Amino acid sequence: MTTDVNENLLAWLKDAHAMEQQAEQMLKAQASRIDHYPELKARLESHLQETLGQQELVEGCIKRLNGSASMMKDLAGRMTAFAQAAGGMTQHDEVVKGAIAGYVFENLEIACYTSLIAAAREAGDTETEQVCTQILEQEKAMSSWMLNNLPTVTRDFLIRSATPGQKAKV
Amino acid sequence: MTTDVNENLLAWLKDAHAMEQQAEQMLKAQASRIDHYPELKARLESHLQETLGQQELVEGCIKRLNGSASMMKDLAGRMTAFAQAAGGMTQHDEVVKGAIAGYVFENLEIACYTSLIAAAREAGDTETEQVCTQILEQEKAMSSWMLNNLPTVTRDFLIRSATPGQKAKV
Image (cartoon, rainbow over all chains, first blue to last red; front, side):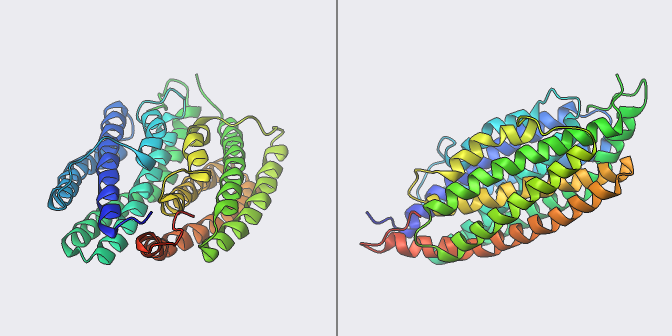
């Protein structure tokens, strides 16, 4: 059985839309729980706004291809338990694990848009290619920020954690 | 309740060991299923060998801190469903989704070792810091390769997929 390039492109755009909905849930949950790491909280909140814009951009591509955004499936669906756990963790090191999970989710997004750009190019769909390139830049910026900030979050957590009377978890 | 820096470091090293065991399972399953993407298969197989070495290195750090490698838990545990799905997928676009998942897992490893390096430094554990730095370089190289290769895998999949009589899935 053969599958047309456009069919694959549309299916992957739907996956990307589901992934951005997952990202929205995770970012909202994480940002709302953080109390003692203000820079991280602010960056999560600003990326949440970007994420809402990305959802609309991807939806626009899906509509142009005569599709409708479907229920979550495939890889983003399989990341759900991970993303949910990252959004509301119970461990004492929640902030560190959450920062790691946020970075990992950004890289799921980076990979999906990198693949989508190749697919849009193969399909000759310049508009989708441009939209995905624009979103990819935002994801890369967020990913870099999260990784660069991770040693600081780790160190701050360890110091707070070893100090009597300080809350370190979030 | 306070938690000592060394306690956190040991717990995170155990997480890293569990993560490398997950990586081993995923890489083995993926590499064994791939038929038509020889470069990807070869890279997965060579990283599997690196992964086995990383397990021993991390185990050495755990033993030096008087710990024993425990059952998988935390974040790596939550990635299990994702990693298992990535190791033996049933979708028609398995090779593309698998390549994305492999890249994502590499970035979980990158984040964990980046955090561990900061923790080892905070604990004054130079040997663990060096081991984690060495492993981090291997993970970064694998991550870059996977992302650079993804457009080619995507394009090859789309072309095979649209060609009657060709197998595109793996």
